[in-house]
Image (cartoon, rainbow, N blue to C red; front, top):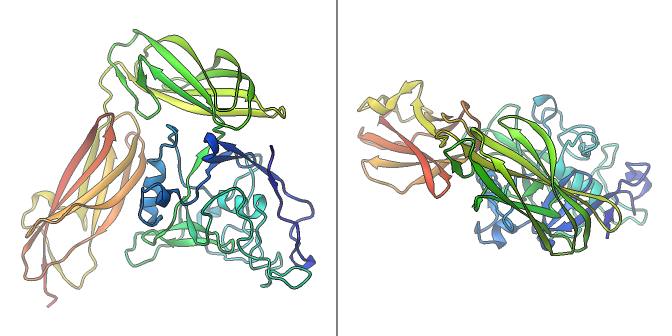
Length: 455
């Protein structure tokens, strides 16, 4: 059944910001664990506080890096590929033009959009257009959200079908592209306030809430194995012999609450060479909560392979249902991922220069941590840890998280220098790591330096 929410109901003339209702539908999927948004063509996790209720995080409030890492590591009923909600930093200038009457990316009544036009902000679209909430300012920029009877109607009034949707800033996945500031000088990222519809920026070290979304529709979930091995997570299993034959086994599950008819499964080669979609099998009708399977044979090709699987059908109302998933494997030569970690300070390669540079304790010093993807497949969820090994060993501390690093790409972050008194030599150990199949890919680097009293 279609659930529609509009943003023009019960609003005083002063607050009317639209001439016709904006309608969107939220369809339950993943057995009620998520809702598909047909305006944005994304799927929202039903529990907005899942980071806490799942036990993944003690409070659900986390830094921007931790929020990204949490979202990208999610696997809901075996479905991976989650992320934080997206938005567009218009003109790449950050929040330089704060507006209360709308028409920008910063402030209140911000641009929202849809998948059919341009999605300016997924959180703003859901909050304003789909759930019909109103900010504290009208379309003229005047403060005061009252209805005709003088009742306050601004802020979070409609939470829709979501649970734990509470006031508070929620991170987006968009890095702030204007000037940077903050106590750690790590830069800023965009957030959206569920309290009042404000969209702005916060220091990446601040702790805000994280809500996960998934691209596309998940009412039909596709799972594929190749010779019995799972392919849902990049880079997938390895097959050393190119040209050999392998067996695909596909499973399509209907995670919605109604039957889906005329279901067909398609495959499209995306990498290393794009090939047009072909129909793999016709699965007919899949009842609510049911599943169907089929098989196919293919030849292993050389390289890092990515295939887009698309399950398509029709709902009881005759609406098109389409869910796309990706499958990966590595064929031919050894395409095991690899990375290189390099730590510098003030442009100095400090890992081999004991005792290292002498730094004054009143200076502002940072380690520049760089991770380079030296392989041919993308690196996912690379984490950098460090600890002080001299004069005493400390526990490992996570200092950077990179959600994705493409082949040959280098990503960097800054880590503050930890000082000690007395001019002792400081030795810090940095290590970068990512999970790969049943093991880890790692690389390490060291830094040496001495902190001196300011003369």
